[in-house]
Amino acid sequence: QKEVEQNSGPLSVPEGAIASLNCTYSDRGSQSFFWYRQYSGKSPELIMFIYSNGDKEDGRFTAQLNKASQYVSLLIRDSQPSDSATYLCAVMSSGGYQKVTFGIGTKLQVIP
Amino acid sequence: EAQVTQNPRYLITVTGKKLTVTCSQNMNHEYMSWYRQDPGLGLRQIYYSMNVEVTDKGDVPEGYKVSRKEKRNFPLILESPSPNQTSLYFCASSLDRRGTDTQYFGPGTRLTVL
Image (cartoon, rainbow over all chains, first blue to last red; front, side, top):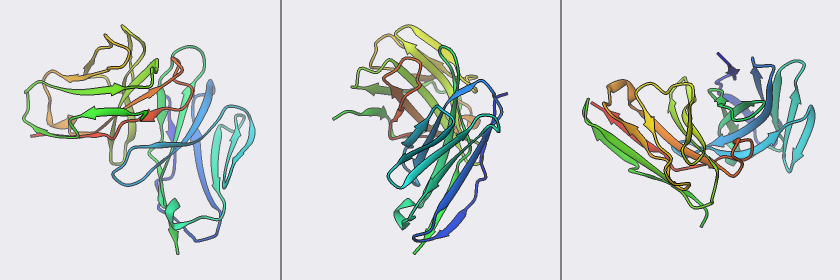
């Protein structure tokens, strides 16, 4: 069973702080990694994807991937109350047509 | 407007009464997928499809059927629904047939089976 693990939270951070969200995965063959944001009662929307080891930045968001340690993280700088949502980590394995495995999500609360 | 649509959005039914949840996308996407989302369990993939007439099981396919006769449509069929299929269902699609790029999610269908 391929697993993706996240702390369900809630993770509370003050407005303006850096929020750090973590995800570990069990399948060493995983190649594609995604972070989705889901507001309560809404559908998930993609924030970032990352394929290579290292950091990938997009505005206030930075995804970090470490395949050797099998973890992927998402940093949100200058957190805003509008960032309060559940953040889902998703992992897809390599080679051909593959299933997608999601973590349970981390609930982030940004306190004004 | 590029979108994934699902119908119905809400459904209450009884055990054993066959139902179909429709999913349609207007983005000419190759890859389509169905998920269910349950508290504490997250999103779990039910079935996915890489192209017309090509489907495969996800992690929780039991009790579900799908078909992909047209590129834009990917209905989810529950032939004999049971209460443990009460859940929030999402359909998603992506351009790449391997599903490695962005998946666009539909608005969700909240199903209650009594």
